[in-house]
Length: 188
Image 1 (tube, one colour):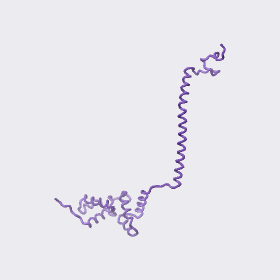
Image 2 (cartoon, helix red, strand yellow):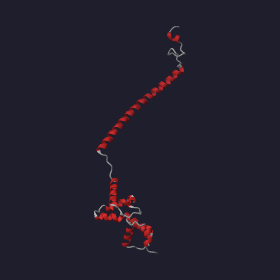
Image 3 (cartoon, rainbow, N blue to C red):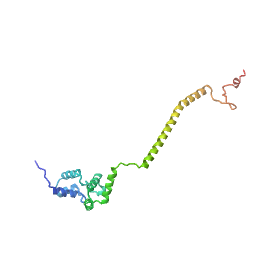
Image 4 (cartoon, rainbow, N blue to C red):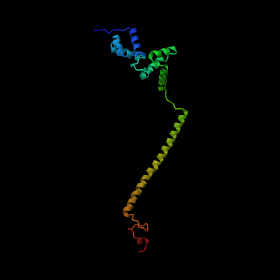
């Protein structure tokens, strides 16, 4: 049975620095150079990430880091000021403005957007207008629904009337041709 090799803290610190900006060496490069397996280095990297230490998983420049790495940089730099902040940024290849922009983005992402009083009044006015319009449309719909059966009845009666007495109107009057005009006058 083989025993796992143990590595002292100095080697781990050196590897973390090589993975971190500005060096940003890949796990494969470090594994070849030092002779530690890639899996061991990946495990260490995962542990450091879980502890909140900034070790980007990429060799990309800081603007192309993922959100988790950017947030980790913001959190680590939160307690620093002046010279310490400058040193922190230089070690990681960051500009203070980048870190400040990332911090603002993180703060903005966690703040609920509340409308101003003017916006709230405007929304309330629009809601009231929409409610009035809905009530108006509902009243109109009710009227039309009530009128629909009446219109249907009139249409049916009109068709029945057309079947009984066709609407062939003479040119000089309104009476149908089938009804003799003499029968209407009462002269028999």
